[in-house]
Amino acid sequence: SQTIHQWPATLVQPVGSPLSLECTVEGTSNPNLYWYRQAAGRGLQLLFYSVGIGQISSEVPQNLSASRPQDRQFILSSKKLLLSDSGFYLCAWSAGTGREQYFGPGTRLTVT
Amino acid sequence: GDSVTQMEGPVTLSEEAFLTINCTYTATGYPSLFWYVQYPGEGLQLLLKATKADDKGSNKGFEATYRKETTSFHLEKGSVQVSDSAVYFCALSDGSGGYQKVTFGTGTKLQVIP
Image 1 (cartoon, rainbow over the protein chains, first blue to last red):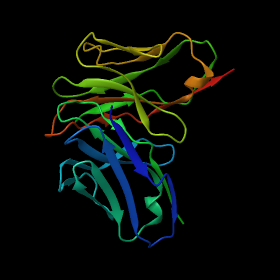
Image 2 (cartoon, helix red, strand yellow):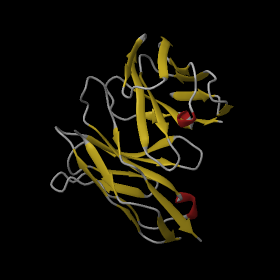
Image 3 (tube, each protein chain N blue to C red):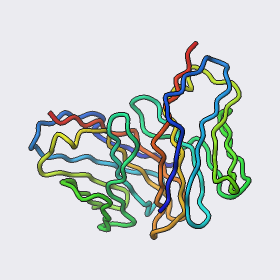
């Protein structure tokens, strides 16, 4: 069966510091991968998606970036965090032909 | 573009009450429809899905029927439990854009009291 992991689970970072969040998927090959952000009490905002290694599409221009160095690894990064980057970050995957997405446990980021 | 509209929350019910969370959608083509559930501090879990008109998705006592004529996918449960307290998201995917983009509603928080 497929599983998706995210780490860290929680993170507190000062404004201006760098960020690296990691997501890995097991039990499937060539998944589509997604990064979402969920602000407190709000819905989901799609940040990035990837259909293959090295292929990244951005949905919202901002100070975040994403990379996919391996087939089942997806990384969310920032060089300098802003207060507005605080939120709950969710990674998800979908099969190439499937329409539903499956989510990881999330990372709670607080920028102070 | 695609959109999903859910009823505003929070919804507060007593245990064993009947639940309905309304969801309507706008989409081009023939979307698949989903309900996701998010428990506090966790990621989203796929609760049920329907892929074509008149399909009924069901799981853990929850049901939703794909109504093309009313563009709706309302979530129902006959008898809610305290453990059902969570945020519920309606979503659709029409498979457009070269990848399986999913459009989510804003979520409806359900609180079940003993």
